[in-house]
Amino acid sequence: MRSITSLIILAITLGFAGSAIAQESEPRIILISNVNVFDGKSDELQKNMHVLVKDNLIESISIEPLAVIQTDNVTVIDGVAEH
Image 1 (tube, rainbow, N blue to C red):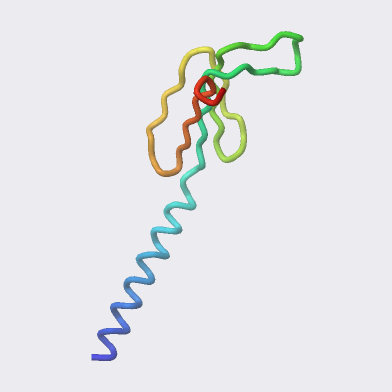
Image 2 (tube, one colour; image 1 turned 90 degrees about the vertical axis):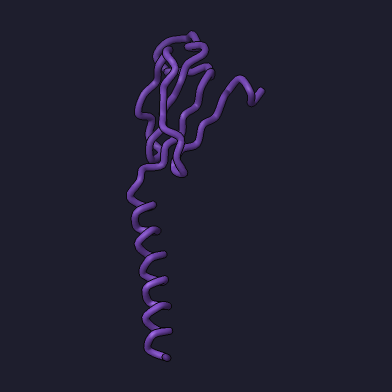
């Protein structure tokens, strides 16, 4: 009985460890919509832009809305709602 209990505990532990490893491999994504962007190149703000950040690096900036699939690793921020 003790060995069966040990096997069950080991299986549960490995299951949690496996899911933690799978989550770590997914990039952290933040989509910030409807914000003004200063690019450092011109004196004017780019208004109502959409910024996609993946693993703390800006991946894209667009005037068009960007689509992402909402999962646990995705955070969506609406700049208009944050005022």
